[in-house]
Length: 354
Ligand code: G3I
Image (cartoon, rainbow, N blue to C red; front, side, top):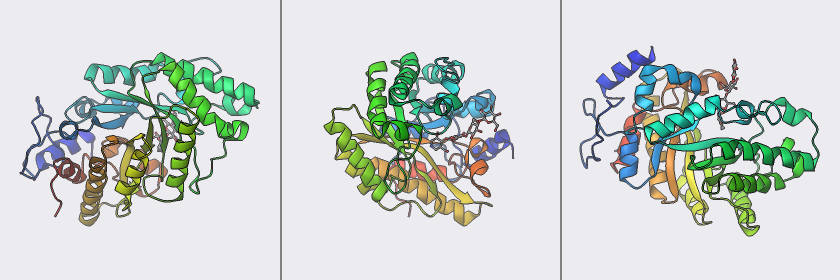
């Protein structure tokens, strides 16, 4: 189904809320049933003290007028994250040659919509241009490369992002440091080099490390907490930890709240940065119902921990989800064109699912 048809149908059926000109306050009772028009997710999230409810987006989508009607709505989205266009391959494809056209498009969109921008990301082993890995830099050379990249990118956007994912996915699932060009050349010092460079480039941005499989208690989460403690002890600026939250229907972790609180107790903020909950296709009523409960669980966990600043879905419609191209036979991972949206709304309204 085309997005425009899906949106029309979903609005009519009540699974996708209509855009309202003025956000209404969270209703205290009525469930978002098939015919009710509800406040948007961001209006509800901010009403209960969160900074935002947001979405990732990517440049090719920005010409889709139906899609943009929703993305532009600060009722629904108070924050956006560029899904690809601020990454290293997009911003510094050649040594010291910076391109900001696509990143600027997203940054300008956030500005014109009054939406918070999360910068994503500065140092990651993926989407790295070949020159970073093939030049065989020694430690001094790679340090300069990291510092120059961060000064260039975070410096260009200085003052605009609320936060930057400075280091993305530094850990293996067993809690050890991931072997990549950065770690292999500099050891774990690349993380402090990057965070210090980001602080210098944009002193007011919240500096995050963003990671997956740390949303729940366990070895990898404990390792990330140790990293935070070490960075803090060394006086390295670290403000937040991003919980990516790419989950599977029926397998949402049961220790989210306890785990989020453990990070909060270290004095860092957290954010749910890339939420989606995929299923093996085709969709069934049972899977969609479980997914609704799963989105409820994740949003409710963020509400229970004050250090959890906001929730970002990794795009809001299945039309632009990264999931089907990566996980064969899986999809329907985004919430806004599914009953999952009701789960989000009910959690934000403090309503029980049962
Ligand atoms: O830009 C090229 C384009 O020139 C080319 O024609 C096209 C052909 O396939 O590919 C385009 O690049 C793609 C890029 O997205 C931009 O669309 C890459 O192939 C594709 O691999 C890349 O996927 C992105 C992925 O990160 C890369 O690892 C996804 O869109 C993006 O959603 C995903 O996001 C990551 C977060 O950054 C970090 N956490 C995990 C998350 C999901 O993997």
